[in-house]
Amino acid sequence: MFTNPANPNHIYIKQAVAEYKRLNAEREAALPKIVAAVVKAHEGGASEVQLAETFGASRMTIRRWLGK
Image 1 (cartoon, rainbow, N blue to C red):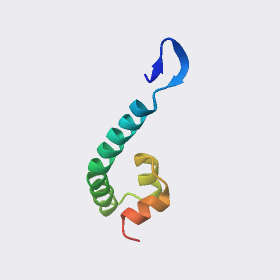
Image 2: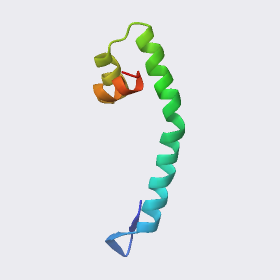
Image 3: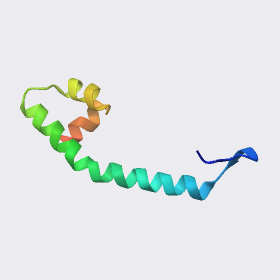
């Protein structure tokens, strides 16, 4: 995606940084919705371990999202 066809080992840093910033902004925009879903699932009886496995986060992150 970021390689130069003439030099496959060359990485376009500006393109990589732009892609990183775009993806990070998307993640930050989605995070409140993810946290709300975690809280709702926990209130519905899901354990911290189940939530961590389902959402691909550590159990400690889940605990932080739950305000523990």
